Image (cartoon, rainbow, N blue to C red; front, side):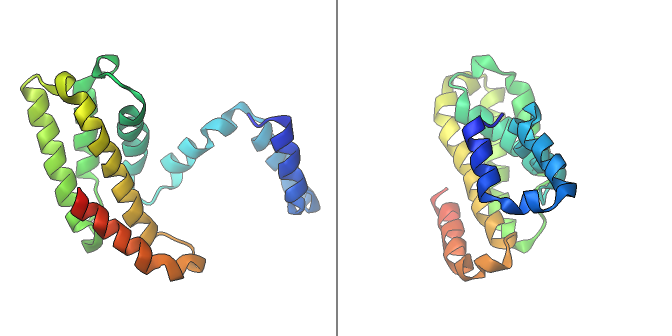
Length: 167
């Protein structure tokens, strides 16, 4: 939930909301509700350009980014989610190299798990999993942006390609 200070600053800086009474009540309900903290999850789940993004960000990436030991989650389920995400990767040519990397990484995770070494290597796997998400996000930003950011496409594209090369 937003602190009172943040809420008041938001209202002051966004006078447009109070100019339209039909949205003011609705906006106030959103900003003051407990579910506001989960708004990003809702947006990913309902509006992400690709269906796998929700699972990738909130189940794969967040686990790697926050959990220091694989003893605290179901590894087999984690691998299953990884495989589900792989099956839903974008089919556009722009993501072909990325998809190949993701598939190879997913296969290696499964092999590591089959050899009962996932727990042993979890701390070494976390960084590449985090980078796998960040690399995808870099490519996504090239293809899904507001027109205003068109001047940044070349720079963003170089960062995406560089991320793939580094991976």
